[in-house]
Amino acid sequence: MRCTKQGQYNFYVTDLKSKKRLSLLDLLIAASWNDNQIDEEGIREEVDTFMFEGHDTTASALCFALCLFAKHKDVQENIKEEVKSIMQENNNLTISSLPKLSYLERCLKESLRLNLCVQLIFWHISYDMQLKHYLIPSGTMVGVNIYSVHRNKKYWPNPNVFDPDSFLPENIKGRHPYSYIPFSAGPRNCIGQKLAMLELKLFVAFLFYNFELETVDELDDVTFSSDVILTFSKLFRIKFISIT
Image (tube, rainbow, N blue to C red):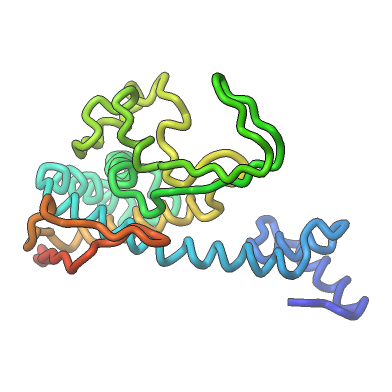
């Protein structure tokens, strides 16, 4: 959206001020008018990023999670009981009730630890950076292998085992904050991470409220294909059994 006339500009600014919470696009447009903090190309790039993170990576993360939940029947039953309890308490699922799904959240986090969508992230170092034992010169492109970070035995005793208890409060305490970075970290982290987790929680909750999952193929035999995001190299089948 672009306001070229003064009247249009004043009308839109007034409209923004009347809102308690602004949408992403509203915030970006307001920033472009506030001392030109961002230009039109920058707005387009941010919206493109948000849209990409909102469907492609989230869909891949959902597939990985459902495969793990279908394999681990005990985990699946625990998720069902938690969802059923919340649904009975609130008669439905709402944004305010989703944070109560703490066990499901731990399961999703553990799934993202094992099979995160984006395996590698890169930074261009614009100044000399001194690490503990190394100096990274300006102009270097640094790659971070998140797959290996999430399997570091120093922080994950059984790195290849699916264990939602890894994210219990007592197990998180004292763990290095950068030992788990499915959405990257720092000021350049993923702007869509909260939306992604809400989408995953909502979809899985409604799914397990209505269906039971069974694996058709063997998950341990699956190989992956890593491109922009991680995907299955071939079709992996899950059976949905209605429980309603």
